[in-house]
Image (tube, rainbow, N blue to C red; front, side, top):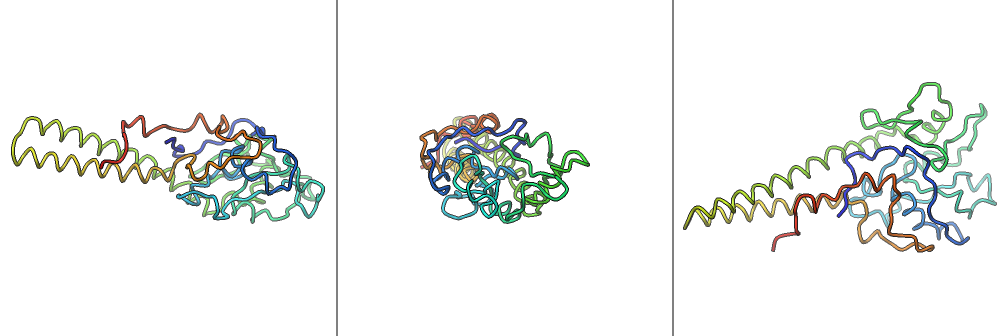
Length: 255
C-alpha cells in the first residue's frame, strides 16, 4: 500500500498530459484523466480519497472540467486537451466563468502553469503566492481555492496520516517488546504477555486499516483507461508517496 503524503506538495512544473486517448465523447476520457492527474483535483490538489475515504468512483465527487466551457466553445467539447480532472467544489465554483475576464486576467492552466510558482499553502489553505498576480487571483477566485471545506479536508489528512503512522509503529513496538518479555516468564505472566501482545497487534491492524483511507490508489479505483496507460501515477505525485506498510514491517492483519 502506497500512502498519500500528509500534505500534497504543489507541482513545481506544469502537469503535461501523459495519456492520449482516441477521440471520443468526453465522458470516455474519465479514467485517462484520473490516472493523468493522479486522482487529484488539478486545481485545489485534493485527492479523491480526501472526499470519499472508501474511494471516489461512483460517488460523483469528481468530474471532468472543460477549460474552455462547453457553452462558449462547443467545438472543444470532446477535445482531450480541453479536459481536466476536478473535484465537485472546484467544478461548481467556476461554472462557466470565462478563461479571460474583462480586465485581461486569464485562468491559469495546470497543464501549462506550475502551481507552486503561483500558489502556496498557508495554514492548510491554498492562497495566491504573490500579491498583484492578477492571473493567480482570478484563478483563485474562480475556483474558490480557499473554500473552508477544502482547507478542512487538507488539515484532516495532514493531521491524521502522521498520527496513524505513529500509532502503527508504537503498537508494533509494544507487540515485539511483550513477546520478548514472554520469553523470560512462565505460567500466568507469560500468558498475560502473549494476550497483551495480541491486543497490541490488533490495535496496529486497526490503525493500518484506517491508513488505507489515505492510499494513493485503491484496487476498486484502479479502473483501466481507454489508452491502456493506466497503472502509473504522474512523477510529481509518485515521488511524494510513502510505502509505509512495508516500512513499518506490518505483514497484514492478525488472525
